[in-house]
Structure formats: structure tokens, C-alpha cells
Length: 53
Image (cartoon, rainbow, N blue to C red; front, side, top):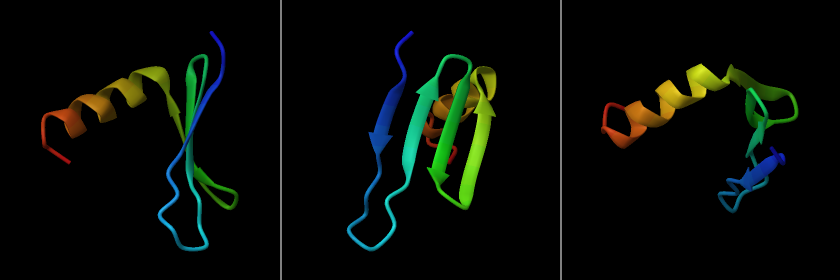
């Protein structure tokens, strides 16, 4: 699978990204990064879609 990167720029000086690369998903920016396994990422997505987060 090709690596996917989505920018989450909010207009200020920070520009976090979501980077999906195989079984690893990285969310954040340099110095402030969260690394999730694919299963954890899927759980997070489902909770957001369900309105739990």
C-alpha cells in the first residue's frame, strides 16, 4: 500500500498531518507525534464516526 499523508493545517503556525504507512498511523507534527497501530486507528475512526469523540 502506498503511504498516504493528509495535512490538517488550521491556519496558524502548526500544520499537523495524518500519515498512514502500512500498519502504522502517525498523527501530529515534529515534537508532538502520536503513533497508532492499524487496529488502534480503526477504533479511533469508528468512535469519531459514531460521535463518541
